[in-house]
Image (cartoon, rainbow, N blue to C red; front, side, top):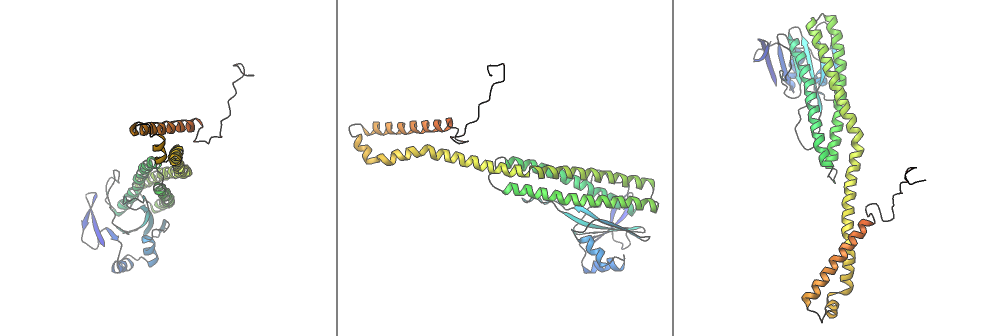
Amino acid sequence: MIRRFDLTDGTVVPAESEHAPVQLFVNPDPAERDILRTVFGLDEHTLSSALDPDEVSRLEATPDHLLLIWKRPTNYSGRDTFYFNVASIGLLLLEGRLVVIVTDNLPLTSGARQTPTLHRPLDVLLGLLLITIQHYLEHLKVIKMIARDLQQKINTSMENKHLIQMFNLSESLVYYLNAINSNGVVLTRLRAHAERAGFSSADLAFIDDLTVENTQCYKQAEIYSTVFAGLMDARGSLINNNMSVLLKNLTLINVVFLPLNLIAGIGGMSEFSMMTRHLDWRVAYTLFMVAMVVIGVITSIMLQRMDFGAGPFVRLPRRKPPPGRGGR
């Protein structure tokens, strides 16, 4: 799909002309690929690089054009996998024209901070770079919120579902770090090319701002990735501990009922009726139930005093009092 735009009054507006200054190629089909090759002079390798999500960011500068392969975050779907991914975008800047090649639709103007006015294709290109960096920052905020919610679920979880989701977040941050770092290399090369090409001081200052924004974004993603990786083993141990506590409680209940089952099995209902034939059955069975409850309570108290959680034979060493306070 091809979308064309004009630059009017500092904004982009849809256009129909084939000579529009800004042209967006969304997942181009064979016919549109032929237009990119014949009209704009792109080779097949460059087209494949612009649509390959695993392509590394790079910059190619010639006297006739400026080509950027830029990494951007894909739109987050909000599924249970919590997996964030990156994609490539091709930006071809010609004399008075900008060609954008993407795999899915991309807004050319969005975000709270943009270039003041869009009078030139170069303004649109720099604005897209800023939008992409802001998109990364927004995703990092979402990742942090999801991680907090998953941590609350892991605290009481006894299955691996939420831990796998946390692994997906950690893996996504690794891809983000790689993409943001490669984008930073492109910005450095773009700054050097801008000086040689005679860009205006305002453009150079804007590229410097982009570099600062990208560096801050990288540092933030690096901190999140380090925290996630450092706490991953602890989260796995927490789930194992929750399972151990559950098994301990189930074992405690089983141990409490063991003597009761033994008494009921040895005595049997017929023998108990024979032994209590001189008593009213209502009184006999009431006393029997009371005795069972008392035995269960006594068993539970004994297990608690034996420190059942640490084992009946585990005893913590007594702490020696400091000298001068009754100790020697």
